[in-house]
Image 1: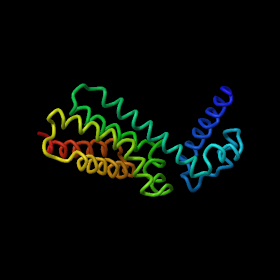
Image 2: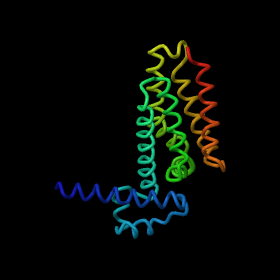
Image 3: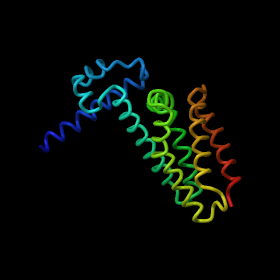
Image 4: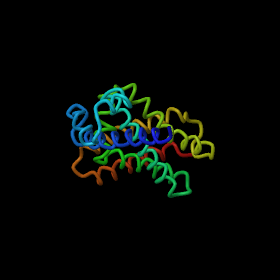
Length: 194
């Protein structure tokens, strides 16, 4: 039984890895399931068994991408012990990770289009937005923000970061656009700082 679970886990990971490559290179609409299973040396039945459909496979890939981005945000934020620096580093990590080639199409373009706005938004709330809310709440508890709604600030900042990532992804000079974005995000946050 244990070997069967290990094989199942390996199959799932293999499909997710290969699918991520195809979704990144071709986009959801142009990705062909037969090409994914051929490259993974598996069958369509494996996809249907583990994911139910191409859309289910895409959902699993998006969850994986969001998990990686969240881990990166946490890791980058942890580079400082100062709560304010952690917030800025986390915002920078999110924007930078979101616009990387391996993430942007899946996370920013196809995610909302394929799964629908509500599903994509719900996933975002459980990932990056939750980390952001926790950080802002901790900062308010430490006196950084007084008399403001952390829920509202979380949604405003998350929206700004998501929209900025979409804008940056289309710009010819990504590094310059990230720098401009972070300057404005920092200025915006300073207005709320106690």
